[in-house]
Image (cartoon, rainbow, N blue to C red; front, side, top):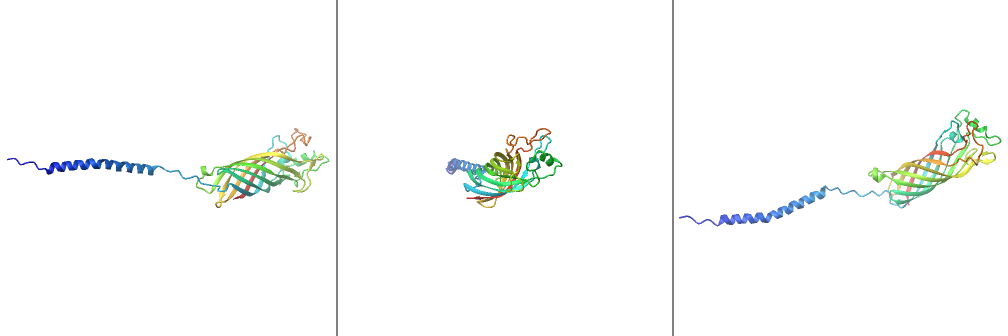
Amino acid sequence: MRSLPSLTRPLTGVLLLALFLGLAPLAALAQNAATATATADSVQVPAPTRLRHPSVLAASASFVHLLPLHILKEKVADINDLTAAGSGVMGDIRLYVLDGLALSVGGMRAGYGLLDNKQGEMDAINARFIDSDPITPDNYLRLDGGYFNLTAFLGNKITPGSRFNPYLRTSVMYFDWALHEDGRGSDVVTYQDRPIEGQNLGFGAGIGTEYRLNRRANLDLSLLWGYVLTGDEIEWEGLQSPINDSYYWTNTHFWNLSLGLVIGI
């Protein structure tokens, strides 16, 4: 006689099937959660932009070294081609419109002297100064004036983890200048009773960098090309070479190398 089938086997199968069907969604949910966590961990959150200028206003003071540029166009030297390096000071107030953009207004007190290192050229110029003050190596070109600068800082773009904060700068200048006989404060050199002096616009452009000392203080090193419209063919009519009519007093070019300190206010 056949024995009746045991009830434990079907019950065991039913229990295993129910357990599988119940745990499968939980396993899938756990796998999806782990995948989402891994994806979130793999996404790189960009670092916050570094604040370079916590103060909206700042003041600066700098030492200036002027290096004149000699641009000899017509093979006849003019007075501007006989200039030598000089020094001075400048300072400004800066407004940080953005952390990476600043407007500044300031002034400069500087100038440079003359050298007679080109054989015969100073004598050729003085041949035109009949009954006027001669040009000598003792002469001093005073360059005093004000400027307006626009500065764009690039540090957060090209040196984000550095203390250095490079920048580009453009400048509009206005100079009160004069060619003095023997240093600042002496008489102005004249030509046909007209002093060689004036007030003229200028402009410039250059590069530089700040170096962070602490949260509010930075060193500032810059090199700026400057161009001042000192030449005036009407004011000093006749002050020109007999060889090719090139003028002996022209516009002024220079490099402005400065090192200073900027303090946030």
